[in-house]
Each structure stands twice: as structure tokens, then as C-alpha cells.
Amino acid sequence: MTKILTELEKHLEKVPPMYRGLATRALKGRCGKAGAVKAKCQECVGYEDVSRRVGQCTVWRCPLWRFRPFQKSKALIQDGLSTSTPAPGEGLEE
Image 1 (cartoon, rainbow, N blue to C red):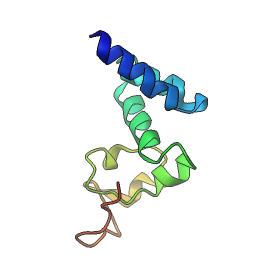
Image 2: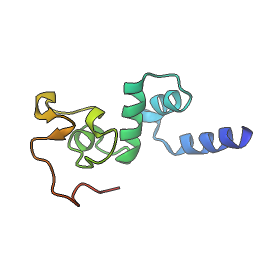
Image 3: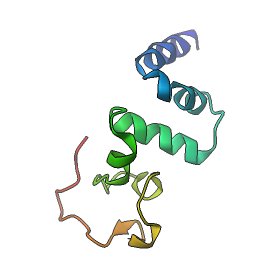
Image 4: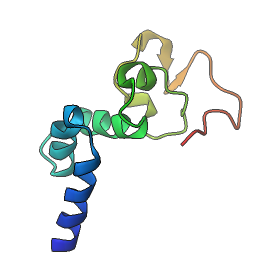
């Protein structure tokens, strides 16, 4: 268990201070599901231009895509796919 905690601390040191609080709570299981999803999305976009990049995310195959924060309009989302569903092979950025 000590090795896991050490690795988590190293990981959190790399998180920008502005996002570290949520990341810490998420990793310790001290936030809700929405907070955990938001923390993962922030990490996924590299903590840069977060609201725009997460809101415009095209990685629709991600299991969290449907639940991501900062979506412009939930009305455009239907069964987890937007009205402009990417062609197969698109939206695979990592």
C-alpha cells in the first residue's frame, strides 16, 4: 500500500495547483462520480484550455464521453452520441 501512496503523491505533484484539489479528492475517493469524471477529463486534455477542450472532446469511444463536463448543450447529446457522430476511426486521440 505504501508504494501506491508514493506513486499517487508523485502523480499529484505533476498536476497543476489549480486542478490538484479535485484530483486529490478523486484519487482518494472523496468526491462524487461527476467530480471523478471531471478530474479524469482534465487530466486527459493535459490541464490546458480545459473547459473548451473537454466540452469539444471528440473521443466519443471513451466510456466517460457522454458524462463529460462543459458540454455546450445536453440537448445535442442523444444516446451518448452527438448529432455529428464521427466516422469510424475518428475521435481516437489519446
